[in-house]
Length: 207
Image (cartoon, rainbow, N blue to C red; front, side, top):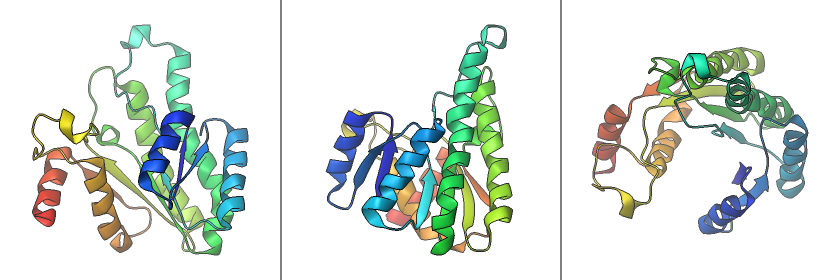
């Protein structure tokens, strides 16, 4: 498992916590040169690619009111949330194709419904959803491409949550659920997973 992030310190700590099977590479997915170098580092370390999970994003769903939204803010969100997955797919595709690999794009329920002052996030996630089925057609059948649109996920430490058994799923449980269900999805498909319904299905499965 390879983790990529702009934060070297935190990324390295996460990789260390995950054990010997995890490796960290510093990368800003919006910078093409860094993507090229990062993919080359991964190939140099492991010699192959089997899967790409595009989860890097500016996760803040709200932007300033439309009249105050700066173009550079808009462009940065789209660069990370939409151009980043495109660049990674572009440079990973030849190696994924060689091993019949998979790409999973993490979109959001913001791609399906919006809140006030969420134009940048909604546009980027909606674009990523469309990019998913375009990539599925372009890269299939050698590379399977799917998307997941999760709702709110509680990413805090367990001790920080008010109720450990709340209906909001944790990132670890979401990952476990995807590993069990993704092989059965058709290429280009996307599953919308509101937090409440995903939480219920996860707790019933785990329990």
